[in-house]
Image 1 (cartoon, one colour):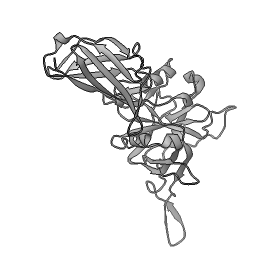
Image 2: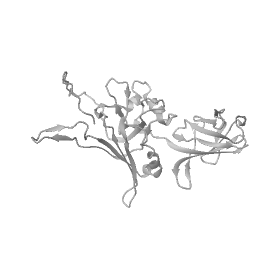
Image 3: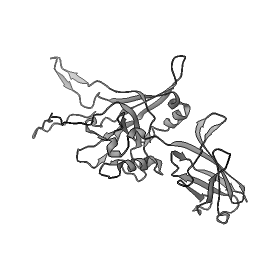
Image 4: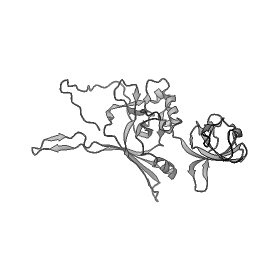
Length: 319
């Protein structure tokens, strides 16, 4: 919702012609969430002048700092975009006067169903709502829509959320329905929805509907022998007894780093990082023990693992 701005000295009027072909916004496939501000404190945007738009978006998906990432949701169902009624002040004469800034609140509401609505997803979505957020609209044709304040702008922003309205809750399965997650938020009152623009699948080099979010993974690291570390990596999905193992972690493309927390110093990169045969989700690597003393706490970080956001873990050098 935004108010009508009148320029009485030089009134202008919108031209109502249409081009021969327009990029139409179709039904929502899913939204893409993004922190409004990145790790450097500046507004997160998409540079529409880039010649590598598709690669830029993928880089944002896999950015090292969570504040610099985009977060595509799974495919949604029953997306709706209700708007509260415009409000008027009505005089005794019957004449009405539109009240700017009152009413006209846009709500985005949607559902995740069945396997997309499991408790693991519920836990992840409960992490939103603490920092300012923007959202992009991915439609079923594979275009991604955001906001440009002016047609000549070189950046596209997300739709600003009224972040304090972000809500998610579960609707339990019954004899005739599957489990659902009900998700909703309001747009900020200053969002000018008429300034929406699309980046098409042709411009990206792929359909935006192919974007998918990262999986959270935890690691447990131990040092059974001096200089040799065992690493077990699992997602936060699975059962209370058995979490899903991360199989095929790309040890050639991802980066494994060690940091001596006790001495507050980065360590030499480990060597021999590889999967343990016959043990899903288990890996091993070696490190320079000369860079640690007994009882030093060492932090293990994994970055750039395709499809995963692996959380840091620590072990104690006990030898």
